[in-house]
Image (cartoon, rainbow over the protein chains, first blue to last red):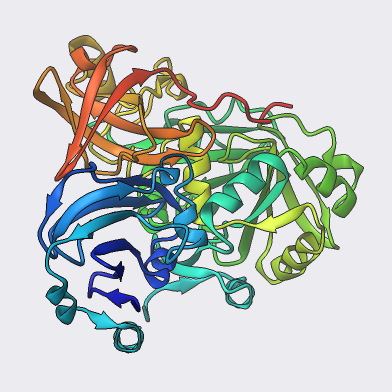
Length: 124
Length: 363
């Protein structure tokens, strides 16, 4: 399924009921050099738009919000030692975690790629 | 943005697609290709910084008779010509109005180099402490300054300026021609690496900037990398780690205070020395990549013990590092602290400075 985005610049890509989550290329660029990612605990349950994780760059510390409700089933532990993967590939190798999504209808509250690009343009 | 001052190199930064932001009343380059890449380049090669925003004053006259000798926390008259000295301008309470460097140009001539945001006030304060009519001139607008810092900086400058640069020892300077212009080349800096500060006429700086950047060993670096570099060696940043409510003794900088001479603020320092400071500066190291940041709170044994004044992720150490002020009982090296802000919580240990001792500073 195509990617969807939040207004807080997270992306989610759903396959079956598994939702892969990360932050957008735009957000990674704005943050600058990323130095630390606080990954969620596997097994943690979150509601849509709750705080899921945290990310730090040389400039700022920010929270990452969950695009969907669900349970964390896997985290990208490569980010522990190589958080710069988020700068290099925010929307692919720099994914944050995978959720077992509990309500795929929530995707309706997110933006598709075209809407997100328009949203980002409006921020400049 | 209208009121921000721009250095003579502004167009060069924009041409390099630098991220520009306000700093001390100036529009300055924060980063070019990225803070971590520029930091690494400075530790390994030679990084070029536009530091034209800093202020310079020229004093001419008898140092003692005109009153300059009693203005700072250190003796000016005992600085040999061709050397410079770091220290402070204090208020009556012993608080730091600014940290600065004085360059002894001649028997009766010195240059005072101050922080950008404090330039105007420094000039007024210094003037008020001199004899009426003393010759103190603000030469900031006509004086440009670039820093070349990094282990290869000497090799580069020997090629660009000449062999006279090779023998300049730490905290000494020479006056020489740089691309045909009268310049002062000083073996000082703010990075912990071998490096030079070059002062020259404002209209000549673009030529030097362009010439240096043509050298493949040189890359531009912004104030973001500069802040990270100085923190790794534990240098204080005025406005963060030093201010007019902080004394040099509390800030652990008594090495730059000469209590055997007279200066404004001395009585307050002697009083503080008798009673002990309420809060003292510490350096601390975290146990993860998490970064402490300015204003985060410091806890010791469950109680609030102080505040972080500077913090960053250190690429050289691979963990978060910071400076802060705490109650004296929490300041001993080895003390375990908790740093907190909102959802962020990290453990840290008080350590001795510098965090990163491996720089080429004295090589």
